Image 1 (cartoon, rainbow, N blue to C red):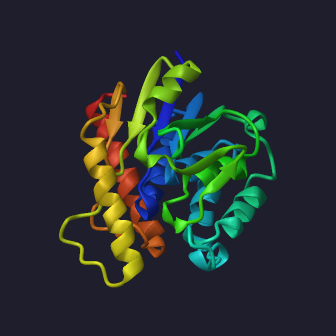
Image 2 (image 1 turned 45 degrees about the horizontal axis):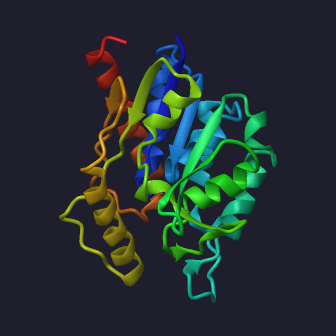
Length: 249
């Protein structure tokens, strides 16, 4: 039986995916297929290179925003996203998606066609940059005649993709949304929390076609609290352990 893991979006909360993957490995479960959206695409792509889970955790803690923040003069985003793309290219050895140790797909939103755009091959860095391109925060990715932004608007938790890839058993990871009690302290936080709210409403109308769903409670983490990586990882690991025990896996 082939196992597929779908890693959902969630900005900084997405670090919890590392803890989930860690718990799965402790149970001897290593996915045959991985699909990711936004932060889930970033974590998933690096994981699928075959990197050790301990090294992935170390990277999450040490690669802080200073390594990928690149302010933009464009009217389409506060950040260019080019430094993030460069970091991803370095971490994945400039490989293409078809060269990964574990098959991996990523989803972005094609804003002109109002539909998902699925990356199945080609540059890992471009795919992840597009999937994580939060509108107005990052400049969009222009690919051929398409304008691509964060995949969370069309397929926040891409369980359908791992099913299409060939998975018999689907594990979906939903890192949820920020708590309503969180107060934004600046314009950037307000923007990200607003997008978070929009995606939360969109999520209500899409069922997750998965056999198992793991839900780490990282709702107290703001979307831009990337310094909370270690906390999120621990929460993800604990949530996965509890879920796997409950599911008797």
